[in-house]
Amino acid sequence: MLKTKALQNAILHSANFSIIATDLTGVIQLFNVGAERMLGYRADDVVDKFNPSDLHEPAEVLARAQSLSQEFGVAIAPGFEALAFKASRGIEDIYELTYITASGSRFPAIVSITALRDDYQEIIGYLLIGSHNSVRKRVERELNDAMAAAEQANVAKSEFLSSMSHELRTPLNAILGFAQLIESGTPAPTVTQQRSVAQILKAGWYLLDLINEILDLTLIESGKLSLSLEPIRLAEILRESHAMIEPQATKRGIQLTFPNFDSAVLVTADRTRIKQVLINLLSNAIKYNRVGGSVVVDCQATPFKRTRISITDTGEGLTQDQLKQLFQPFNRLGQEAHVGEGTGIGLVVSKRLVELMGGHIGVESTPGVGSVFWIELGLTTASIPQFVEANPAVAAAMPQAADRPRRTLLYVEDNPANLMLVEDLIKRRADVCLLSAKDADNGIAIARESRPDVILMDINLPGISGVEALRILTADSATSHIPIIALSANAGPRDISRGLDAGFFRYLTKPIKVAEFLDTLDAAFESAESTTEREPLAEKVQ
Image 1: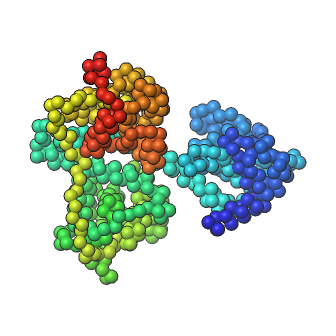
Image 2: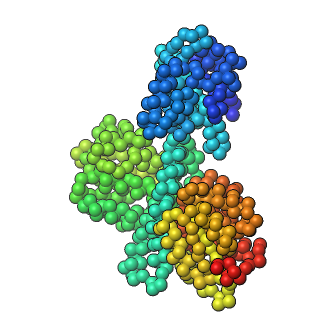
Image 3: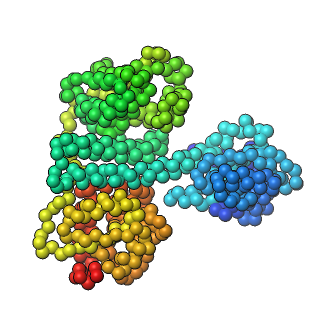
């Protein structure tokens, strides 16, 4: 804390570069010593009176507005909007414009602009850090420190990852949801079908794990990621990895060879993370291999009670220069034109994960021959806790008492596949009648007319959002008693927390876990029965 305050104090009182902070509309709220020295104004002359665009050459601000309008396909007005447009969308922005001093003199400046956000990541203003362009090299280090103190370097990445998570979860909800329905359907699937469905579910849940892990990237980089280190059977992890990667190898004609060894060999690791690392290394060994090549996995004990897992490929190999760049983020070593898939972060994440598990990762490579990637993990003799693994695809066909009252569920959802999935689930519940609406306006109208026992609400709906629909229904005395469950692909911890704070009875995330979904539905029905006297079905749905 002391170091942070000292750094902030040094920045605000530094005469080497200007710091200007504005409110959300662009009105200057802070004008540091460097800004006074550089621009010739006193802070009292500009605070609450000017915005930063008033200090720039007007023609250049106009040109920037026109350039951004063309780049983004929207009309951007000259003035502060032109300066803050990129920063307001989480895009790191450094621009070069001419500053006009209080005396009317002009000088070229380079300015970094960053959005300031509150604890809920809402924009509350902007920070502009500027320097005379001629001394850019001299103050570059200070500028980077100031940007680090502002902690805005990862805003664009965080927004992208959040959006990507939502876009992936929506189709994955249909894949996993219908696979669970097939697995638990009547008549039961054949043995061959059951095996296929099991592979779909295994790969689908693993893909969901990876989506969640991508969202943890910032935590990994900051060293704040929590791991669950426990004794794990190495043979089991390798067998699961083999099953998941084999289709990719078969498609490219790559021969896979895995070791057969004592299943009693235990390593200390996080089960999900070590599998993520192995899948990443195996996928790379296949992807960057020659067609018809081979990948050999081997395990050998090493000193200091460790085991080394080696993955040897017959690819092109890596030069010494490439090896030096191997663990740099977003660096694909010039393979972009040859292999379409990949982001260049897999090895960086794998290295950090292995190190967090107390292990080591390395590579040996010969150009024209191939590469050997290896990881070392600590061996353990600790026993594996005995537990019964929960099956997320448990069937929902529970017998219902003949005299059990019929309940009504309203599902507000604009995605046809998601609606079909819930319809198929509810068909297994003889005690539940399903109503549906494709947008919030219709959902509100149906809720007011039919008075369902429970409402299932998507968040991202056309027109008004599910959150706004919740507020409207809660404010209406006719519907305020109805439990409303959120079902959304917005699955970040902050999304869930804000949803519950807004008043949702529960917040479920996509993809649906059938058992969890049905338990939540039952809890909502029980809550509805305990808080209001039920109306006869004939009066409710007519």
